[in-house]
Image 1 (tube, one colour):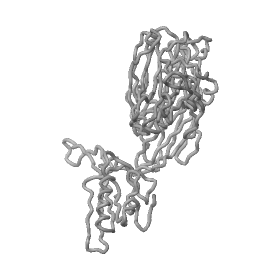
Image 2 (cartoon, rainbow, N blue to C red):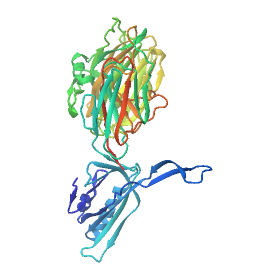
Image 3 (cartoon, helix red, strand yellow):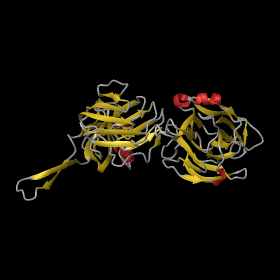
Image 4 (cartoon, one colour):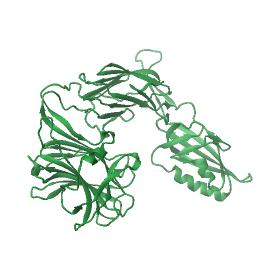
Length: 525
C-alpha cells in the first residue's frame, strides 16, 4: 500500500486500498483529510463525598469509541460517481470491525467499522465535475495497534526487556512497553521438563494455570509417551518405521494396496496418498500401522491411552471424494474404536465420524459431526493452519475432541480389551477424484496410568507448548484449548505504558529452564 502520493494519504480498509480501487473505475480519488484526533472522548466518573462540602471523589475514567472521519475528493463523470457509489456500498457493508490502515502510518492497525451514513456530495460547477466522499469510522477499542509484534525471551536479547532466571521455578521479566496505551502480551512457554503449574504475577494482578500443589515424587500412575512422530517434523521417522497396508479398520470396504508417500506442501512434511491402488473392493487406500511399544515396565497393551495427531482435509474441488481413518485395534487383532474424516458425495459437505466396535466383529456409528472442506476456519477444522485432534480412552470411556469441545461416551463392547496397534488409512472412492489435501502431519501416542513411584504424569509434558493470550484470556496447550485449567480469581494481565515487571512461576520441582517468549503489539489511543 502506498503511503503518501499526489493522491494524499492512502486508506486501506478490510484489505482493500480505497483510493486505488476508486481510481480504477475511470476517475481520480484524492484524500482531503484524515482526522485521527488526539484521543477518544474521556469520561471521568466521580462519587459525592457525603457531608463534605467541596468537590467530589474521583473514581475512574473511560475512553469512548474513537471516531476517525475521512474525506476523499472524487473527480470524474456522473457515470464514474455512480460506479464509485456502488463500490463503496459493498466495501463499507461489514458486520464487524475490520482492519483500517492509513498510508502515513502503515504499521498501525485500527479495528474499525463505518458509522452513520457515509455521504457523497456532488459539485457540478467544476469542470470536470467533482464530489466529496465523507466516511466516519468507529474504533470500538479506542486504540490503534502496531501490526508488528515486539518480542522478549529468556534466550533472546531485546531492547524491549529481559527475562532473568531466578531459579528453575521462577523467572523475572523486566519489560518496556513503548506504546502509549496498555498492551496485552502473548506468553509462550515451551517446557523442557515436566510441569504442573504456571503462574504469572504483576502489579496488575495474578493469572494461574494448573495446580500449584501438584507434586512429582510419590507413588502414582504414570503416563509415558511411547512414540512421538510430531515434534521436529518426525512424521518422516514415523513413515519410515510404520508397517504399510496391514491396517485393521472399522470395515473391509477398501483395497489396502495403495502407496503412501511424504508430501511437502506448505514447506512441511505430511504422509499423503501417492497412488490409490486398485482391487475388487469399492474403495482404495494406503495405510500405515504402528504397534504400541512396551512401556518402561516391559508391559504391552493398555486400557488407558491418549492419541494426538494433526491432519489436513481440504478439498481442491467439489467433486473430490476420499477419507482419512484413524483406528485402534486390540491384542486379538480386532477393531476397537476410531474416527474417520470422509467426503462421500459431490459438494463441500464432509463428515467426522466416531466409530466403535459393536462386539460382534463389526462396528457402530457413535456420533457424527458435519463440516465444509474449504479453506475457511469457520467452516473447516482441518484446513492448512489447524487440524489438531485427539482421542482419550479410559477403558470403556472414550473422549473425542471436536471443535473446542470434549464429549465422552461409554462403550461396553470395548471394556477390558487392551489396545495394541494404531492405524491410519488415507483413501479414495473408486476412481473418483481424490481429495487434494488429505494428509497426516504428525501423531503422538501416550499410555496412561502405568504403575510407577518415581514420577507423576504431569499436566504439561516435556516438549509441550503453552500459549496464553492476555487479550482474550485464553490459553492453549499444544494448539488445543485449555478449558478447565485456569484457576479461580485469574484475570488477564496488561503491560502498562513504560517499564514494568512480570514474574513467571512454575512447579517448585521443575527441573529444566523452559523456553519463554513474551510478545505484544504496541497500542496507541
